[in-house]
Length: 76
Image 1 (tube, one colour):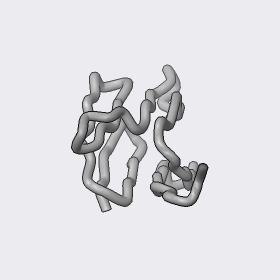
Image 2 (cartoon, helix red, strand yellow):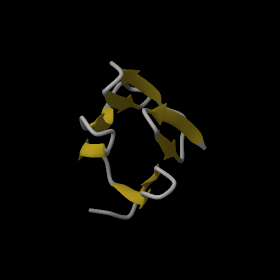
Image 3 (cartoon, helix red, strand yellow):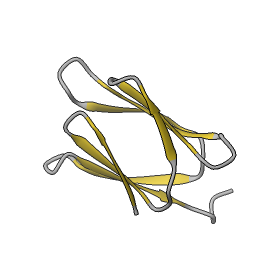
């Protein structure tokens, strides 16, 4: 599992990825540099999932400030 901290939020992925972040927005890239997820923080510190570019399922635990992203091979 790959963990990445963005503000008070923990992003968890089922594979290792590269993250490009400017502090308030992050793009998650795979080994081929394909953008998989775009997330950002709002002015109040909430997480905004802008876009998922892959067949991904998100499990959000707002109390723990944690989001798990699972890649799904079965969508399509």
